[in-house]
Length: 48
Image 1 (spheres, rainbow, N blue to C red):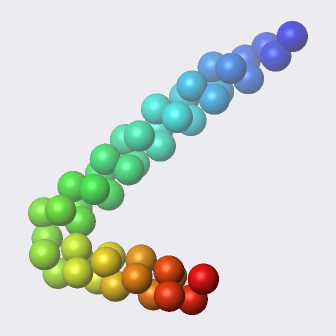
Image 2 (tube, rainbow, N blue to C red; image 1 turned 90 degrees about the horizontal axis):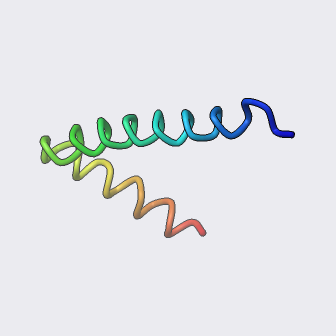
């Protein structure tokens, strides 16, 4: 019934995992980036 939709979802989840892991490593390996990221998150929470 869903055809290749289920596989497309699985592929999207796996691709997003890789993208998030790459982002995580960039942030955690660089204190300046970690600080900038924390500031962005803080500012987003402050506005909400």
